Amino acid sequence: MNKFIGRASAAMLAALLMVGAPEAALAQKGSKAPSFKFTKPVQSLLAQAQKAQQGNDHAGAVALLQQADALPNKNADDAYMINMLTLNSAINLKDNALLEKALEGALASERLPAEERPKFIRNLGAMALQRNDTPAALAQFERLLALTPNDSQLMVEVAELYRRQNQPKMAIEKINKAIAASETNGAKADEQWYRRALAIAYDGKLGAETIATGEALLKAHPNPTNWRDVLLIYRDSTKIDDQTNLDVMRLMRLNGALAGERDFVEYADTATIRGLPGEAKAVLDEGIAKGALQAAKPVVRDLLAQVNPKIAADKASLAGLAKEAATSKNGRLAYATGDAFLGYGDYAKAADMYRLAIQKGSVDVAAANTRLGHALAKAGDKAGAEAALKAVSGAPRDQLARYYQIWLASQS
Image (cartoon, rainbow, N blue to C red; front, side):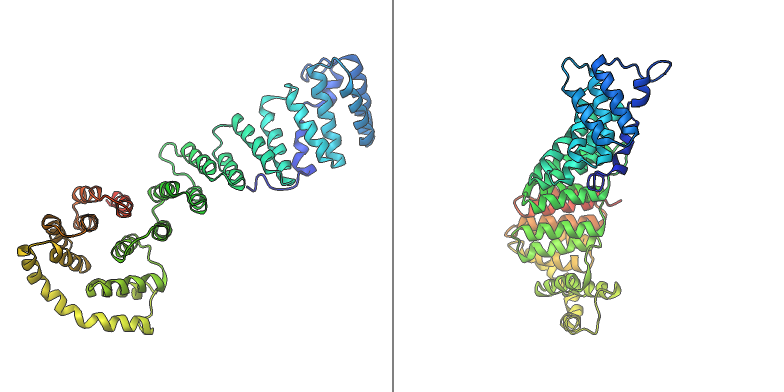
């Protein structure tokens, strides 16, 4: 919004005086200036007003121009030049009300060169903002946008005005149009535009728009910060259980989006509670290696003390559990064994267990397919992973699966 906000000062508007060249227009004879034909009564008053301006008598000039404006039967040239000279005096008098009237009058005369119209309208919008008249500013900038329909930066600025007017859907629509307009020939729109759309949607409690803008952000700019923000918004906006939360944190880890002690400790603690010491240990080791965790801190030390003694026996039991799962009447043991294999990074065996769990039943199929997609992707079977993730149905897992699909699409 920096383009819009600021005082409508003489410095900001002085360039407008270049339009129309009043002195040359009034002289006309022997001049190559645009051809103007004034009515005689108006021309006389224009000449007097111009002389007053040259003597720095701008109040007197305005009085003469007002007389000219009150005359009947004025033509377009009369109206244009009255307003252009009024503009000059209004700037010198620092009279913004008069300035706005002159700008509108020049626009209405239809003698203002087409290439100059956007400048006049932009300044009208800036002055409306200066007096905190957001509806008037919005009207002017929509008017400007109609003249410059491919100005993506202007679309984003107009979006801010809609946000101010408590119209978040319109704001998001404008930002999306700006993104579409700027993403040509493979170019990517400004990341902050995507983030702004997401923030407006989230603050406005627009569920569908929050999901759509979040997905768009991840597809265009899949960096750890954006992954963390989108997944935290998903988690905070949705009622999820511990198992779903575990998969959220797994996806954060896949994208390098775990940040700080809180994330790593929460993940490790959740894995520990779910009986996954191998996964908990891997997360703790990663946090320590990245400097997010300090091994000597009590919370980290206690978690390590819980999981380290269990790992050897846990790993040794997996082969037997896999055999037992194959003969089990339901898929619950296969499902749990798949989780253990996943935590140790044995993705092919994890995938086998999840398939078996789905086949035998009595498990959360949506969760099993989510984890099957995770395991297959890490095992290198991208097509299989995509099929598993697409098979996930029912809220809130279906949306989490779509986030996994976005991650999968980014894998080479």
